[in-house]
Amino acid sequence: MNFSAKGWAWRPRLAPAEPQAAVAWGDAARRLHARLLLIPAEQATRLQATANRDVLVVSGVASDLPWVDGVAYAAADERAPGLWLPTSWEPEVPTDLVGQALSMAFSRSPLLLWRDPPAVVPLDRQLPVTPQHLQRIDAYWAGR
Image 1: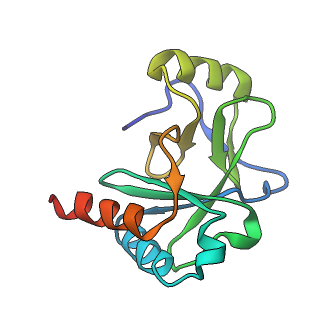
Image 2 (image 1 turned 45 degrees about the vertical axis):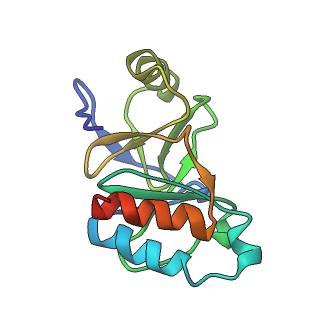
């Protein structure tokens, strides 16, 4: 879902948050998907994923998150339940207020608020990373 910040901007975090999700857009999402197909089953069982036509989000503990060129990272914000943000950026306004506004606007939780491209991504439909789930994502992207 597209989202544009009105009346506020992003600022770099003083200290990056511990990654809890890998976030990949466009071609990087396809590379992340391909990488997920290659990870050991034991690691995959500890990960969850969700996707839309533009982005793939894979959540789990930092040591299990796969890396590919172009991936960025996100984490839940401890000040705003249900709000996930980039690990290196934060809104310049209180995140609890941002979280409340987004919760009211989207009626879903948790939500990933992304800086670039500006977007809100619902995370409430994440499923375990399995070959079947990855196949469904691939078919969705292919329009099948």
